[in-house]
Image (tube, rainbow, N blue to C red; front, side, top):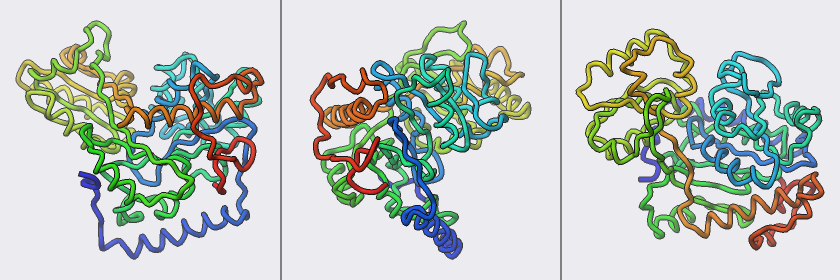
Length: 391
């Protein structure tokens, strides 16, 4: 059910009040203009959240990449969490996880025809992408995990909310997992409730829509996670259709923020499930590798190891995995699926229309949408912004 993974540490609520006071002050400084937000003459779309932990940012950014890459030159800008490099880095064919971080590496591996860059200072990253000779043909920039990075004012601000950790039931850090007060959601143009159960009913959607209490200028969408067929991390094996897991004992290895939903989903798709859970963006040590090797060796056959796409980028560069593990190690791809077809069409049309209307590329800007636009109610409040309210 919604909000079922929320845990509040009541004894830490006084500290949450102090933390909230600091965040509210920072937001107030931006709202009154004492801290400056930069706008750009290029479409900028931000995808982020106001909670600590996974809300499905990477699958949603990848959804936008698939949507836009055939109509525009796409760049993704991330901070490159836990990378070992510094400053601005533009990914190329030789980039490693250490250079750019696991999630940007994953996206560059899957979409080699887009630009992927990392920079903790997003304004500097955008300036480099738009002015460097090798990337100045970019048409749209997707900001990964930038909802709190208010020095950049995106044209579209997308807020992701985990169905299992609804922000309306949560508390501020450290008692809960909110990065900022619930009022921060007013900056969003689109709010997407992610990781919804596949059987979510229209009545549930209506109840959640009322509970989220959004403003008239905001659009609410619902998405679920779609599991694809597992593919081998080491290419000597064949792709494994999802239905084949029914007869297998599965060892799930994850280093992500919120593995609970994946555990629950796979539990119903296999004979038995055992899991090794590590922290988000975990760097696998030799001790971890030994644990994986020994745990898998102790399991009954037939058996297989499943990991996430993000974890696979780090496991592939980790030494010491046994040959038995390598032959049985599969990656579980996840994509985003909108709960209702009309929602998907509405979302897609609004995104594509915004990019085309605000592109610096005159050909792209003049091109008409293939499908009717649904954003006639948004009059805009400046270059590159679709809303009629202040972000």
